[in-house]
Image 1 (tube, rainbow, N blue to C red):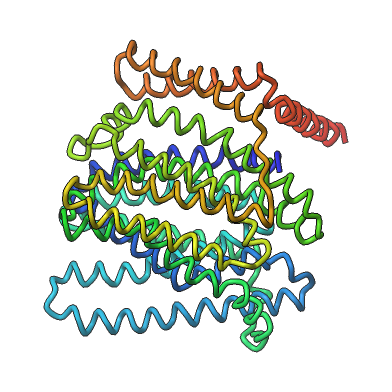
Image 2: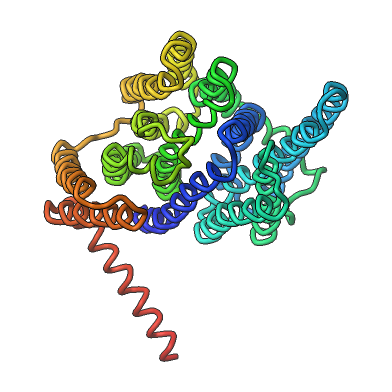
Length: 494
């Protein structure tokens, strides 16, 4: 768990930095209304993937390691591939037919954009399935290399399209085409390196495997629907009420917090979940609870200082990273960061139901939280603007976390060490005071912001180490590096 998390975290930090750079440049490439359209497109692709293929993505991640041997893997991958190609084939045919029928009076560029969105949906959901395979089978280095390549290449290719083809004036097509091309490269490399095509034959489609998938994942369809409302409904309330320009401003600031906490959650979760899943399959409930509690501790070790730092630096980040048209004093950034922190914690307590394949309680939790989120958005966005959506995000995720923690303890208990929490909070407080003082005494620039962040990280790490909170992790890291060096020396001697 420590080793995989140590591999994922630096790589995800790199992805997060590139993600922030992408947001910063996109707000300069695209006007707020065009960026708002891009936000609606990405939200729609995410929702469509979650609703139509989320069950398959989750089933692949859950069961890929349960099929050992060539024959069983052939059944698994042939079934998965058949389901994937069937769903995407239907969407492609119906989507193109719908565009042809309904878009006759639209401008050419708009029709082209609709077509591109369909192909973006296909390429995106395919990368999500392959990511599940790579993550669950612990092909960590390959996954991290492809992930870093993906976010970097998409930004570079979008920049080329914007500057050489001038495609950013009325449409975000440059960004959409970049997604499709780079996702296609991701897919080709992942398939070639894993060689899963060896196990894919249509005649090996298995109704038994499909039934196993459906028993586990069909209750998750309802969860996916309500999670879509909980995660993304604010975009579809803001756009018709306030317009795409306000949507663009909200989406840009929202994306800063969500990108930071997404890489933290994914980095820790991908490092620890395969181990937790393996322990659960061995019917060792006590050790599963210990690993799950340790995973939550890792998440808090990284997410709490991130939230502290973002809250203090929100206004500075908004000024530096976003174009002046998108600046809104960091209000959205702070509230969304709080919501993302709560959501990340809830994802760990939800593992109790995922491991037991009983996902009905998850559905009830998301329904309650989604109704609260949607109700607040509809009632208050017309009055208070898009800032109401940011507050709604934090409140609804807090409700979601509370429901999840209280109800999941009947199955698996997550233990929070009061001493460990105190050390983390104290270290965050010392770091927060230091960062606050530095911001007020240093001239604002990208270099000074980077130095302040590095100062905060150093102070936080020193406080944790001095309080003996991360002694075991540091000792393990040192031992791991020494072992790697010794193995390298042995190979050189040979």
